[in-house]
Image 1 (cartoon, helix red, strand yellow):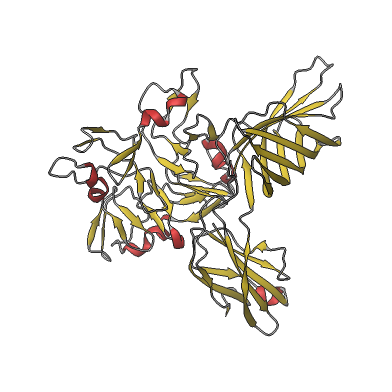
Image 2 (cartoon, rainbow, N blue to C red):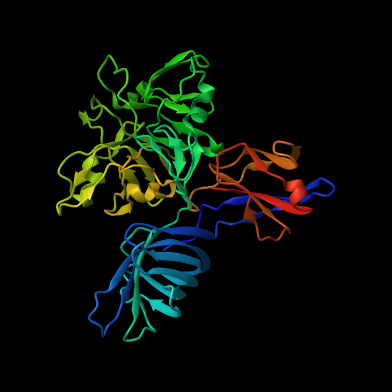
Length: 497
């Protein structure tokens, strides 16, 4: 099984002597695609057991991050170093655990896929800090690569304390999304704490783009505070494609913009709603707008999407439903029933957002909440996988914002995943730094070309280590505030995904 990362990220390095403001562009490109950052998702947990005690095992949700670095790819198995393990488990009413360390992960097989995880970590519960060794007893693989799900048992435990870790992880750095309801972030003061349903936000607790930033190049007059956001995707070069909730007239394009149209934050109309569904051969006259919710532009330009209103397809000879995942080529990628088959819902739940992984696994959210056959409830804002598991509950996605009020689900519309698995275009240019006094003694860098998401990184030496200067963004302009006064020498590179 071929597990090497074929979607290699590229970093362009700049060496800068700040004392003389002389900049040279390094000829080499540093490659970072062999290291993937992972985050634990729903279903991960720590179990603290006492085999000879009568007490009930302590079970706490486990969250955190680690990295996989490819060590060796053999004919049957690929071996990875598990590095920078940093996990936490606990709650406000009991023990809290910190898990740090490293390990090794092997995956592959000749007949059936197998996985082997070996961890060497310290577990600190506030009273003791013990070195714990773990491995898995069950080697079968239950999730599509590059997702990981494995349970490991402590091999050096005692009769009075034995740990078990259930690890469910995905290769992601951030999840960008929007909500269907506005909310107030408890971590900020008014008025910046108001997050609208049209803002694109991040799972790390920041605003990626305000709705006004997404729509400012459309020339909507008079200016409106928010046109809403139904779904979004990031295209090569950092262009954001999206749909809106409110119809508006564009002075720039001299056109009426409808909720079902595919727009760009750079002020262009990528595709009208009628052109999106034209290949399905709906009966004439064409419906003016059947809406647009779930959206992803694939690497070859094919557009995956869903609609808000059902319509008849002459090509397919059937009615296309709002929950079906469609392609602009005139086909159904997955019917709503197929997306939700492993959850076994009792009704068509609609489709609000999607993210399709290279493996074909689809992450999505639904328009309506539903119960499965075991009476488990899934809210409209929960992020789900078509493989039948919850990625994150809506409350966990929004937890970094500390939303005020008693509402626990604010819905989930736009969806984009910043991941090391993504295909990265090496054709990116980072311009020479320019002095700026906004803020004082700072440097600005102008980007052109490249992949979808970017982050400026800085190091004291060309060999590194490099640390982020700012957040991951789609911006063309990057700023290192106070760079000239803060250090005499620095090297810069642009990481892209």
